[in-house]
Amino acid sequence: MLVLLSVWFVVSFLLGIVFVEPLNQFHLGGFPLGFWFAQQGSIYVFIILILVYAFAMDRIDRRHGVESGPAASESTKSSESPE
Image (cartoon, rainbow, N blue to C red; front, side, top):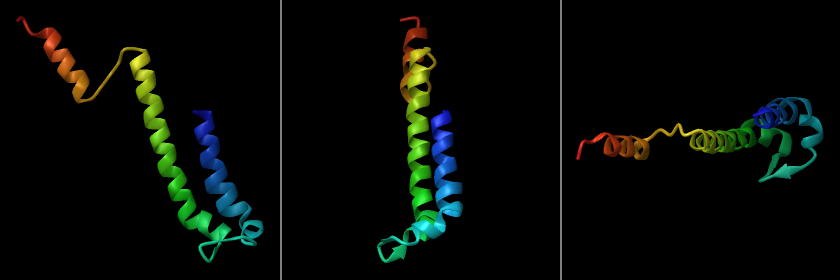
């Protein structure tokens, strides 16, 4: 999870604030790259970080036998039924 926090810090603080001037030398879609990272790119990266985190937590839950969601509740109900 330290990697995810590092990516968040680099994208939001370093690319969006500190290195804006050097990044503005390049353009993406007609906009300076520093502006693009501050306005759009960081949002895309944050969404990807959320998805990576969710998949990582699901994998850890499965590894430790702690599953949640509709599939887990159905399997719990079927194992508890007296049939």
